Amino acid sequence: MNKRNSAYLQVTRKCNNGCIFCSNPVFEKELELDVLFSEIKRLKETGVNEIVLTGGEPTTYKKIFELIDFIISENLKFRIISNGVNFVDKEFVGKLKENGLEHVHVSIHHYIEDVADKLSQVKGHFKKTLQGIRNLIDVGVYVDINSTINSLNSGCLSKFIEFMIKKYPEIGHYVFNNLDPGNSDGVHQSRAGQNPWIIAKFSDMELELSKMVDVLKENNKTFRIERVPLCYMRGFEECSTETRKIVKDEVYRCSFVQKDSDENVIRTVNPGFDRIKADICKNCKLNDICVGVQKEYVNIYSSSEISPSFENPVLIEKKILENE
Image (spheres, one colour):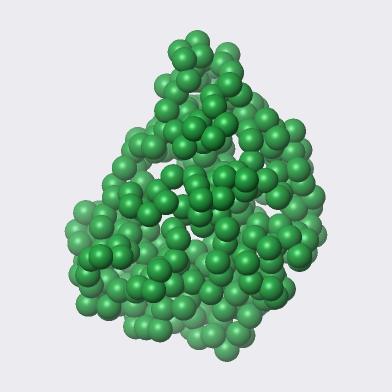
């Protein structure tokens, strides 16, 4: 079996949500099929064997079925990252399944309706996302959950997980992304950077992050955590997405839709490309496998929360490689 080698492909920057923390702010542009086909062929030539469709909201792309047909014709696997809203349409979900959809990451960021709708800035979308998740599961699509860590949920992460596990016991994997206050596409500042109040402090999330991990482990769920330094992941460092990429010598590859170009701009970057280290990190035993902190976070909150860890990095690396 070939090792998975994924690339993220933005097909549109249009979206039916307006999340106040979005790392890829919306603008009215999506790419033509010929541009996407050319990009997929180029990625395949570099050894990519899986395309992850993202956006914006990729399910709003009007030619998504033609795009999926082409990906499959190139003998590539694919996944979709979605806010789940359009999956409320059972017929749409069924057609996607018939056309080869097997795996979706659905983004949901709170378990209380009013707060969730405040985060998406669209009333009623929380209920649609919940129903969309159920529709996907019912037709046999494998669902992962993507969730941000932000100032409105950092104090109740464990309750969020308890809610999700109770409602969807079938879901086995969760990904938690701390907010990106920078410009992930290299050009456009994220909405989190424009709304710094939504960014949670590491010290505010520390206790709930640990409690959440305990709940996940007790229920035999797997998980990954991104943009959190290892000094705030004590006891579960091997679940850091960036640390895993460092240990396995992987890169992040994404094709971004750009506002003023007819083509995608490709970014293939190392896990810590936008991070910095505090002076105290020099004393940390995990310094070589921790990417540090985003510079924009330091500009907002400083690096005073960072402290050295004295865990054995060899044991963490061993856990990661054994997990493979």
